[in-house]
Length: 387
Image (cartoon, rainbow, N blue to C red; front, top):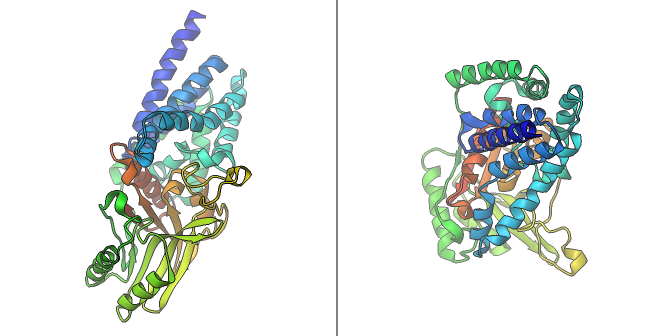
């Protein structure tokens, strides 16, 4: 018993390190998250599995309590409760698939990876080790995902240490030859520093400032300009006419975040705007649970939450490009990007409004995630964030 307690304590510390280093927001450190498979497989009993799974996930998602506190301008308790609740599915899945028979553990980990990658459990499937595929196997596309899956299963076998050495070799090779995903020709992602006012400042001056930014970037040769999530606030026909008028004759297309309201709620969207008018380009597949998406709302007489379009519009056409749009929370998950890749996307466009994450590594993690996926599939990447 004492030996099991000591081993559990050692594994818990290792899980904390894997979560802390792997999900620090540094792209090249993402493969550290793979160590969780090895740590999980060495657990001596289910109590240890619970401890190491919680240690890994809670550490990896450590920015959540602070983010919730800042988003709602409240004390830390709601954030702590949400943090613990969000960890429940990850911990329970890894607890249930663990087996006393070591020969079965690789297959249990495979099941856990699948369940945490797709809805419904994949809705909170953050900190997924598969995200590291693009760092270890850049340009391998689907074969890289297969190799990563096999590697993670291998880590959960008796040969785990040997597999770890092999994966470390791929990691070092990748780090030595790494090149960041490139921007597609004539595209430009705009980062803003407007804090919580972005999307909430409904004045004409804010729209003029954004249009002036677009004009300045267009003058530098950009034909497609991407603005962050919520950049345009609540979209109306009046705003549409104003932007159309100011883009007329400029030969530029703007892709920008906005919210489209109706009596039952709203959609978090990307709009495509040019001198001929505007249209909804993309409706977010997975808004942030609780703060935006509240499926239980109608049962309690609540209205006004964001809608989730789980498997809709995985790719959208812009010019000659088929883009995979990823808005904010979707960048932390596995299934939205893989669905887009299956649909034939040839560029990733990632936008976010991360003012509420100040003091945490959440935005850095989002940027690292999308860069890893773009690298895996060898496609260009456009990023636009507000902080």
